[in-house]
Length: 398
Image (tube, rainbow, N blue to C red; front, side, top):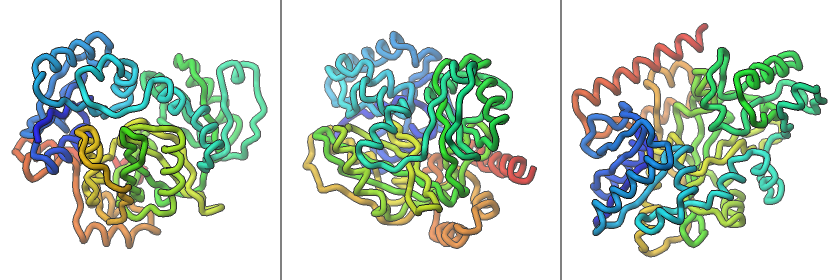
């Protein structure tokens, strides 16, 4: 089987995709992106094309045109590994489809799903539980408004891409707001920094990372879900800009959520990978959804680490191989982004037995692959592990 995987991105997600491809097919991947990152550097399974303006339409398209010309005789598969590249891929879908294989929704559907207000309307229509929500805009902040939610509440930007570009003191990916004074001060600070979009205030679901989970799914080119993989969060990020990201995940049976999310994806005529952030509400025992990402998650390698090589579902689909019945993943496997010491020390007490048992069975780091090892990659991996110990010590014991 000969094909060229072209991964849009050079981060840990991209390396996880490249590693999953290499494990399944023994094929090297080509990553294109804005910068050389340590995850995909000094690799035997990844080549990189880097341009500081790769996120601009003209550079992105010119790069892909050159690749289309260079590799005319083999199938070229595009896989997005970041939100910005997903937007470029959906925007130029019709042009790129002439030379490349990929599976993704159109730009209008992407915009609707990534707009949290529109997404929650879909959740209402198709029965996906989500937290009570209030949409806030700049005019409401300037004129004043009534907040029907009970404190504490969660606050985050509706336009996550625009918010990511902002720089200001005290910036968090998401905020826990305890009273009206905190709410107004936070909103004013965000809008002063230049944010123009809506803010989403939500009922704060009680509980720590032991209540958090992630669901990944693949919907084939015919609109049928062929893979679902659920993972329990054991540890989440502590850096303000990374709140909500996962640093330790264990895959397990997700029958509690598989049926309703499969029905949802097929009902809205979805295509490609979908990634849902979930949190179980201890007040009613139901998983509530926060958002959908139009790609595999940043921690996507957790699926392969747990015995579900997710990328094969995309590749077999695009190369026209036989469609199989949906795989509902049940097996357990531990994926780490931090040193094992960090998990042992900071895992919530309720999950400690599960974490210790998973550690005993073995664990995987995305970037430490037995077929791609070298002194430089080992040093980068060890720096990453040691940095995680230092970071958690600062933020957890401050």
